[in-house]
Length: 157
Image (cartoon, rainbow, N blue to C red; front, side):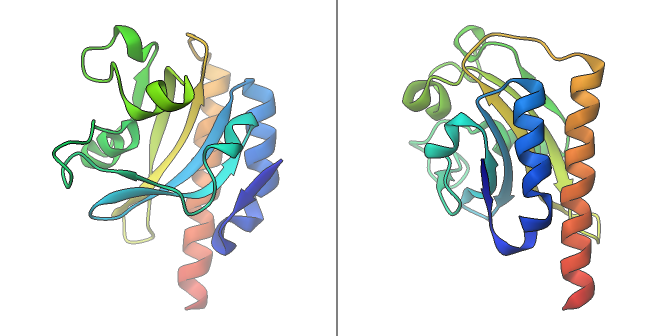
């Protein structure tokens, strides 16, 4: 099962396939705003938590908020892997862990056609795990598909 905003509907089946193939609780496409990370597409069992339009507060905008995984990816424009947030001094006690029990994260930056960072594609799980090179390649494919969806949307505007 998957859901998405209109621009990511073409990749909904890929989102669902990625969740199944990787065996993770959640696969997301997130959009970065100045103050929040917003769910644009979602698949996996944790879809009930991450509905399209749901937002997480960025710590840069809300001092009381814990830094979000995706916020770090966007800010640094680089991959982030957190094997077990409970054992990570930067992410222990974060919102995904405390509210949803999701302690494992792998995320990549998604770029707009002009090269600026749009947001992320990421996977979250409730189990401590590593990702094989094939699983990481699958997430890279999802990123490429998300970037293509953004490029297609830009070309039609």
